Amino acid sequence: MRILVSGATGIVGRHVVEQLVRAGVSVRALTRRPAAAKLPPEVEVVQGDLTEPATVAAALEGIERVYLFSVDESARAVVALAERAGVRRAVVLSAASVTAGLHTNPVEQAVEESGMEWTHVRPCGFMTNMLQIWAPSIRAERVVRYPFADEPMNLIHEADIAAVAVAALLEDGHHGRAYTLTGPGLVTVREQVAAIAQALGEEVRYEEVTRERARELMKAQGGFAAESADLMLGFVEYGGDTPEGGGYAEQDWSALMRIWPDVEQVTGRPPRTYAEWARDHLADFS
Image 1 (cartoon, helix red, strand yellow):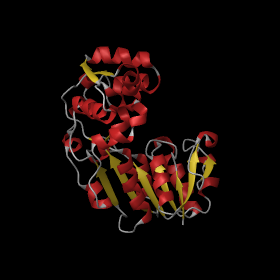
Image 2 (spheres, helix red, strand yellow):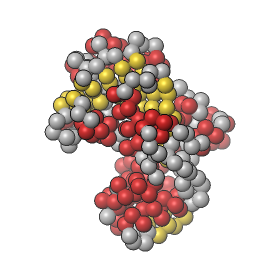
Image 3 (tube, helix red, strand yellow):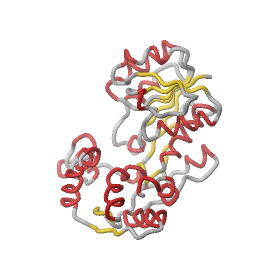
Image 4 (spheres, one colour):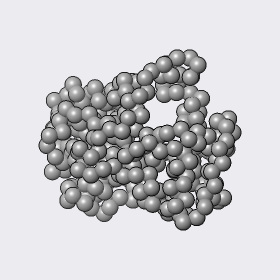
């Protein structure tokens, strides 16, 4: 069996590749920049971009199962190519906001309408979302400046997302299922900073700042922090709605604050804690 992993160098995709390799599976990794992939030597790395379906056709040859990173605008074209290539099973990385009814996912819809077996993996917020935002100030000053000190967040370790996806790729019995993935409990910003400090064995100060000040800091930081500042701090919402203008602000977000049992049901073990995530990323903060 040969499996194609799209988004193979991404936050979740890299874990999917590594876990499949450990399971002894033949993996073909799709990435836009093969030379920079840094994947295990057993992996066949090929160039392709899901936003340009024509570049993916060759990568699908001889593939039986595929892990699909969501790229909305080309969803149907990519799924059609997979079907024509003889792919029998697709696992889609989606989002818990689909479970909550906040939006639909075109890739989910495309695979459901195809002739393939399908499974949707719908994680809540990634524990690693704050890594690029907090790591520079932790490394330089041992401080985190961010708002929302004691607001609970529902977060999941990226390795747990991958573990569920890998189970759906390799095992039978997951066809037609949509798994909503959360960590073992809600965690606040203050608790996250404390867990990072404990992993480092050093004090990491937490300074609560306003949303406006946090946006200034993130915009000045550049890169992912600058690009995601307005969304992560609530100045805009998914789809570009503003909180004052309706849209997602009027929706019921309660499904995203539940602790779902799906990780343990699929993998047979509880999801990793934030403290475990902090230890796994110790080098990023050192």
